[in-house]
Amino acid sequence: MLIILFLIVFSFSFAEEYGYQVFKQYCSSCHIEKTDETTNNLSLKAPPIDVLARQIKYFYRTREGFAEYLENFIKEPSLDKSICKPCIDRWGIMPPVKDISDEEIQSISLWMFKNFR
Image (cartoon, rainbow, N blue to C red; front, side):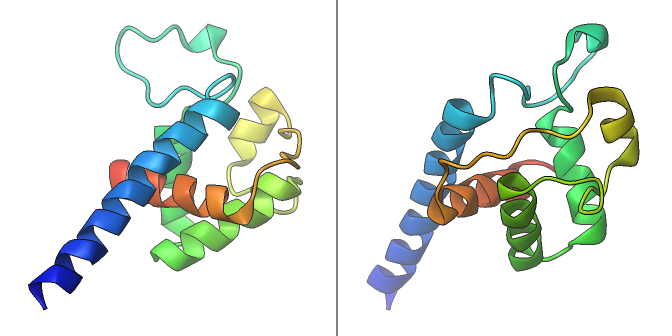
């Protein structure tokens, strides 16, 4: 039983770390992780991930709902799917990310869901 628990915790931890690596590969060229008092908000290319995670969690409170929303939006972003209208007003609709797998999006969503409140 202890071994199974360890494997579950290890697999979530690995998926979360993998999600961060996928974020760096696909998302970090536009999205920063979080803002603080030293962030030059005028130079941002896209909304920070901490802001997006808070906004998504407001509408999708479960990890599954959060992941499903993120998968649908990342692959085919649209104004209708957006839950952050001020973000769209400021930065516009992001381009679709076509070469990312469902598993990679799941990993990003796990990382986002666990690391941003």
